[in-house]
Image (cartoon, rainbow, N blue to C red):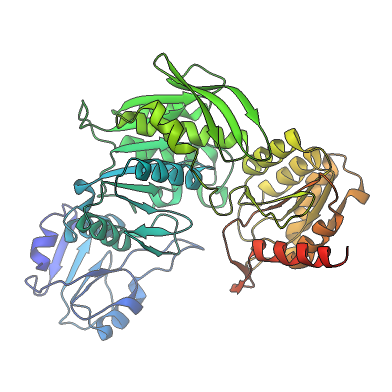
Length: 500
């Protein structure tokens, strides 16, 4: 595709310098990844998240970039064609979708947004679609699956060149549905511009990412963009919004969208509801109802929050004409999602769960769940991420103090912060909850902290190792180190068993 063909689709081009008939063979925003013939888009920086790309234009040219998209003057070889635009972020997304021939139009894309539950809900939807014999792809926090291939990306919601390239691969494989986690940051940075969504799903809105958005209102508005961008077409070929009726933010999203709305909930009136809920350490049972029909559902996932995730998934697929009976049958075969209240069973006489809970609401939901079925003590191991929202730390400490019998404060991903400083912030909440000092310990080394919790555990106790879930690394002093909560738990259980 020629540069001229691509820029003809942009309305905010200020000027074009050089030969705009040059052939473009790809799009990149990282100069290190440039291959000869590709377009280098110089997006502006975001403090603490992303470097400004303009200083790297000469590196890109040296790598073989055929042309540049810039927002300002740059120091590069005079002969390199350059397109100056008002908004390079928008140009990156728009040109990526164009270059890969708008692949989202060739399948049904389901986007899930919310503070908690995105990953589990997306995997539930994916599982239920495949149970119907449909071909799916998935993009999210744990991995991106294209056909049988699984790959991982640094961002939960991928940058436009990767996102559109992967959608193109899915389209070429005649994929029926792509299920995609859509983060507030991804929406704010325009990563999904150019992607057509069939359905947008909202899970919940609670405190998180305030280091980036600064206020809950801005956080909500960022998520609202997913619903505001849904199409205006009516009928079965139109777009749909799936909203959590029990979350107050849903009313805002309803007003933002022109799409048809279907709601789900437990405590308020909704289109899809769950009643007669029974929670156990092995799973959940409930009755799901929709348009006068009901099914008793056996969900092999733990916790009330997973009932909400299931209702979101059911609502999404009822839109697609899949029957409630078929959904109830399919959900029985769902396996726990990695790192989401994932049980670790090595034959011990107490329960251990690995959970990604890293927000106040996520931690509270997990602890409330185990408190309901635990016959012994509830023990939690957790920390908070460094260089992130500091305000949530004492809040999470207070929550742990209310629900737990024993607590170990430890490192999560301290990044460039002092781990002790983070733990002291959390401890403020513990002290405010009135927890006595003999019921908690501060152990900076996460490995040691997990082992201490396993040593404490006895018959019928429940241990939750929270915060990292599926992650297999720790970021300490800016460097990533291998670390897997599940592996450490298994080693600690084996060590404990050997001493019995």
